[in-house]
Length: 370
Image (cartoon, rainbow, N blue to C red; front, side):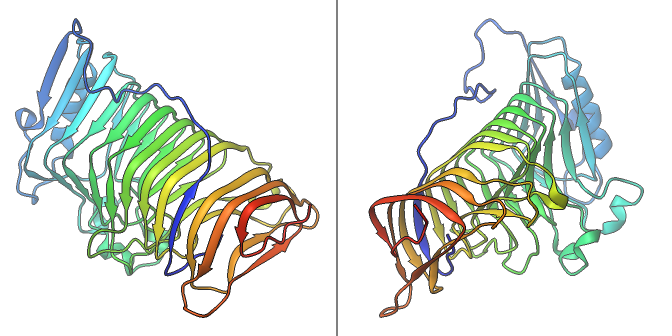
């Protein structure tokens, strides 16, 4: 599907069951411990680096013998240089509560001799809950005017986690992607607001890689404010992915919701059981798309497009462009109604090597081969 300057509501049917640490109420008999970054030397105001103080507070939280251990960032502004919060932790449940505002360094020099691919990262922490209602500000403007190869790539990275949660946080102005989930099994992401200016390059909202059993819902990416997330995808899905449920998302402007690009250098890929439902896309360059490289390592099959309604600013509203050597098979179009965003103009479908079935009302007329 290709959309621009448009409004789209889409439904892919399906459910994914994920056990995570998102429960509002902890077990009544669990032992609890709370740690505040101010008690470990953190200084508010946004001018002094607090990475060491945050790490000291994290180490105390992570090593606590309590079953439920909580780190508190109070309602103040804190500058934090690139930092990784490592696990595993002793506590069954680790709460990282952001009440205030976290600020990235303004200068690229803060990343000297450090991994330029991340700012804040959690690694190997199970039962992790990162919760707001605070703000994570990537202050990416200094990097947007440079070549992308010199950008720190992420505001928040969650690596190798299980049964975890990310919720109620406001992300703004990452240098590139705002949230990356990699190597996780069982994570729920909900109630986020993600925004960046329209001229910011490659500012993905949420990217998922090498993970399974992921839920993303009730999240706004790019709209509703005086910003527009035009840099890249609102949500992007990489390789080695299974059991993803995405629902109740407001996306746009931006590039829509994307799977891929997959199959670079002819690699065989594994992406399955992706469900997208009840999503609104407005002013996006695409709606729901699957992107692959041109080698023979990717076979796209069993993809359903159901209950799509909206407008397209381009003449081609449905575009299924598949490989001659590895055609797309098992494509289903049902209850699709797309019209031109320009009054009086018509839209069409374009299909190459796409096989499947269409039934119910499908406009523009489907071109898939039966």
